[in-house]
Length: 189
Length: 189
DNA sequence: TGCAAATACTTAAAGGGTGTAAGAAAGGTG
DNA sequence: CACCTTTCTTACACCCTTTAAGTATTTGCA
Image 1 (cartoon, rainbow over the protein chains, first blue to last red):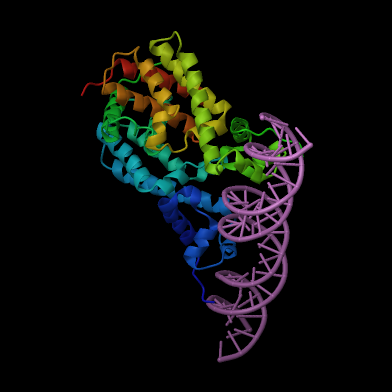
Image 2 (cartoon, rainbow over the protein chains, first blue to last red; image 1 turned 90 degrees about the vertical axis):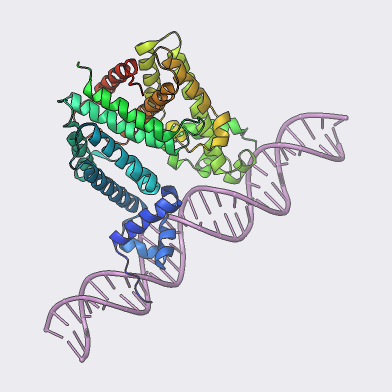
């Protein structure tokens, strides 16, 4: 009965990997336990329950995504920064569909404050420093951008663009052109 | 042992209602059977399996949403049409969170053709008739709009805007102003 | 080093969900 | 009314979640 060396971190990481492989919905405590060569009940010593595990994966994904966006944003401004931000976001979602799905789990106001989601807001504001926008326009623009990035990727991955022959990559690129124009000509109240 | 009068349509409708109440994720064949006063196994005479049931709810939701958008769009053009389209979309998502979640289920290319999703594409093109856009710009604009509508609602309902005091309604309204400006000044290739 | 305390894991079991197969009951039809 | 079809139930196999109690392993401290 050798020990498997399970920790909350390894469990979370394994759950994230499994999610990318088989889909976040299909990640179960049982499947995870099998991966560690351990009985399902053993995992409850490291993680409160299945929901706790899901939230840990959400946090992992949000953190990784923030890291990528931060790296992409470094040293760039204006449209270059916009494109780098957007592509970092979309690429992550495509490379890690399971993690990305976890990142979309509901976030209650209490945990939202301490979550890596806060870093995303900061990064978005950093992006907008290259454009001439001050609050509350900045907040509105961030919400529009965030919505567009997430929504586009979401529709794309659920097959909404597959009916039309137009390349989703090209449309994406043109959407970024459009958003750049929009940010430089944001309509005043 | 009186008959419960279960049909695929009633089942789908009940599943949709239940989804709006308790969340689409929590809709089970068992819970549905309880609602009809019937044993779970009985439902498999009307529906292939749980996945089939989910897809039926998806189709119901897509159809209802298309109906609403079509009604909102009737007799309107330009920005008025844009706002009506967008609000019909967002209002539906808020009134029917469970149905809306079902509408986001993956859509394979084969069923996408026959699905009510096709009507959404047509409606989006109708909306853009009030703006001076021809293909492929029109397709790109549709994808951007669709992404933005869905993404904004998605972020809003998952609590992403709750950390900031700015009203999500006001940001939404300003986003529509911005999109109107964008559509009237769509950047050429 | 040795042994007690803490930790990791197993077994056992209850409870719920999915889905198939076989049979009973209800409804329609000639 | 007898028959056939459809609807529903019972029974069962299987999987997942989670708790409780017990066993094994490791840690750390005297």
